[in-house]
Length: 253
Image 1 (tube, rainbow, N blue to C red):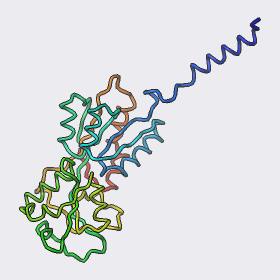
Image 2: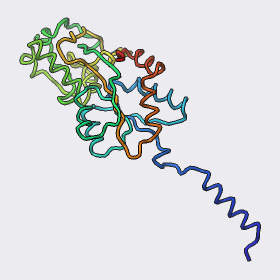
Image 3: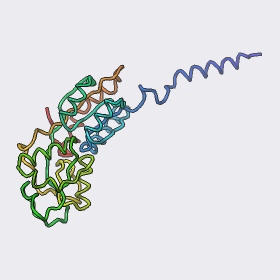
């Protein structure tokens, strides 16, 4: 015989089950923000601020922009993408994956050497000198690598240095080669902040390559998650901008 007390307990259990959200559902899962490797530290700090202010968690996935874009096209569940170049964002546009897009950041290319290096490098022409044995760049098709190769070609030194090139999967891998002893490397200015293992030899003339621009893309999803729109807008707030400036990014308005 089923008693009233038993029925009451069942009713309470059902009510509780309805009140507790199911963990891991798409609506409650962390927002997935894919970002160019060069932005990782700044974006990590901004994501933490966003979570404190909104209660919405963010999962940051850094990497080479071209590689991340390919993953998104193949179905990776990204909500937003911060690319290090326009061409990679254009690729997502061609695949009809963009809900919103705006230019967010700028950057500068620099030549770096190991902190204890005694090799004097003041121009791209100096990279052709015999004592410069290895030059670390990000791989081709990676924005930082594309910008660097363009600058070397525009400076008419590519043919003299091509055989010295060692490629990193992304710009941080290229930086690591210099940390480990490569004679020189070309990375973003922002990658050198707080790094005592390398020093900036000089800044590359920005006229030697396309403008370095970071477009922010809101990925088209069906349905769109409200939190993703909030994060898209938040990355342009003064709070987020302060973190990007701290990391030496240029702000595009």
